[in-house]
Image (cartoon, rainbow, N blue to C red):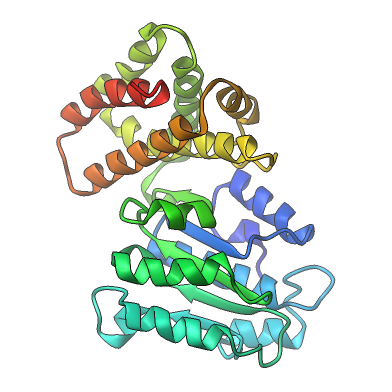
Amino acid sequence: MNGIHDIGIQNSLAENLDGLIKNGRLPHAIMLRGGSEALRQRLSLFLAEAFVCEGDSKPCGKCSHCLKAQSGNHPDIITADPSVQGEKTFKIALVREIKDDAYIIPNEARSKVYILRSADKMNIQAQNALLKLIEEPPTYARFILECDSSAAMLETIMSRVTLFDLGADKDEISDELRKKADETAARLAAAILQPTEYEFMKITAEFEKDKNLFEPTLPALQLIFRDAVIIKAVSDITLSGHADISRQAASKLTMNALMKMTREIDNFRESINRNANKNLLITRFCAVMRSSAYER
């Protein structure tokens, strides 16, 4: 069995997830955002296997639960995929099926895992129905939501799930560009905490020279502010690799400001996916992020 480092996600994310699994602290409701569809599915199945595994090192890959999970035949790992039913959206009827099934105790494992593919294609009614389930789930129920973008997800849903950002498709970004984007994101996050706009505008100007840098920087920046939200909510689990900057952001900015910035970054990512003009986006980015940070 391949380990989490063989899935294809960033090393920092793999190490953090590995730590959560080893310490038995995987959240009951997880959102996997970004990356390729295949990458999200690989990680979902790995986490589902970890949830049902009864070996000492999870997932052990050897117990009956792991073997059934790997073969796709575990009765307590349920995949909800609207495309299988020929649907383009994730309808409320499918959420209701999940809800009805969730209150039936697991067949074999201690946990019952629901993988929701294309979760970002839920309408408001479907999301509200899901919200009630993940707010007060059965003790054994676990939920893994896969989505390309979370821009269309309700804030109430986002506040109930633990977000793991897979970034852009790894095959599309070189290691050199990924490293540069991560470093740029850290500089931007630190600059936004400064009393003046000069340093932030100076760094943003680099996107004008290298427009390919803008897109991979956004998820890295978002992860830093996501960590700040978690820290502010009295937890010290960080994923970005820039915990020091996240702690500074948590101490200097309000929760509303941090949440607003993560939502605005979502909007920029969504605009890029719609092939919006990058020059205009970059120009708007500086003003929007500063105003969001200080709630103007």
